[in-house]
Amino acid sequence: MYNKNTKQDPLVAAVTAALGAGVATSFAVSQGQSPWLALGITLFAAALALVLDRLGVV
Image 1 (cartoon, rainbow, N blue to C red):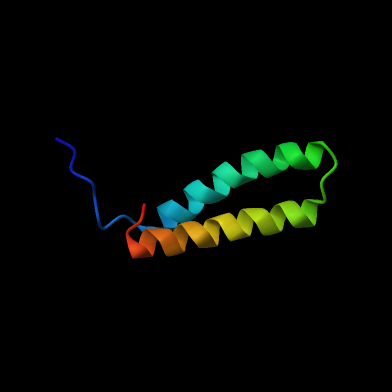
Image 2 (image 1 turned 90 degrees about the vertical axis):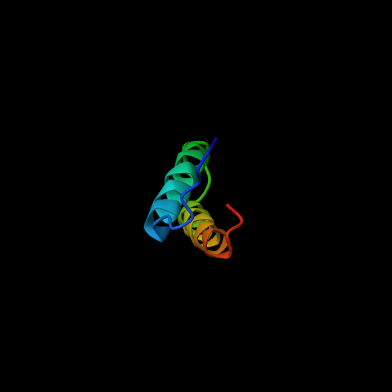
């Protein structure tokens, strides 16, 4: 029924995670959060997505 592509490009996972985290952190920056902390959160989310994608969790 659903054929999941197991050979997905890791760059796609990283960009998707960074975009999702970027939306949330840009809202947090508009509310007063440090931009450097927001950048760190975004980079951490992208790195975690790469690891989880590599392990086959997502």
